[in-house]
Image (cartoon, rainbow, N blue to C red; front, side, top):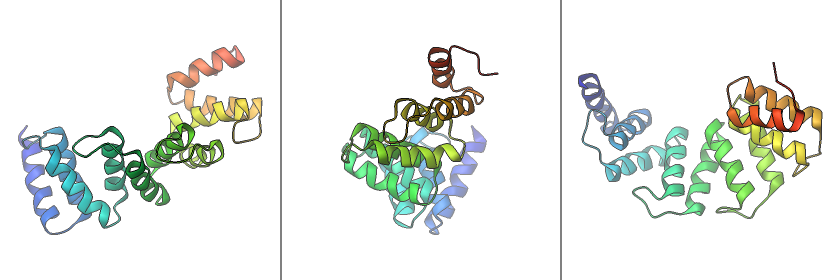
Length: 179
């Protein structure tokens, strides 16, 4: 698409001038092959430049690349390090993914308490999957005090956003529709 090609030119100019947002946006276009030839290796290089300068979105994206092993050697430890940097800046999806890493003991020692901590941060910002996962932790008392009312509250918040797992959890655990 011509607009993507024009955007890629503008982002490349910005990236080469050292702007983190330009570096991250160019990397996204390179990763998706939008307006440019798809190039995961170059995308990763631009993400790293922006991440090294503290740009949370790039840190999150780089964490994901390490988690799945796309254009870098798969490393849960590296993924956690980048997710942590972005999460500490309030990047919601990084907080959610960090919660998953702690819940499953990937790249870190398994900790329900730390998973709850990161799910809570993301859930309070409206991240629906974090709200659902937090609801499950609260429902079963894993890493947090058990509370049916609090679990239902988190499931409802997520279900109201259309999160299918939360809708399922409400129906199964509370046998009622959330509206």
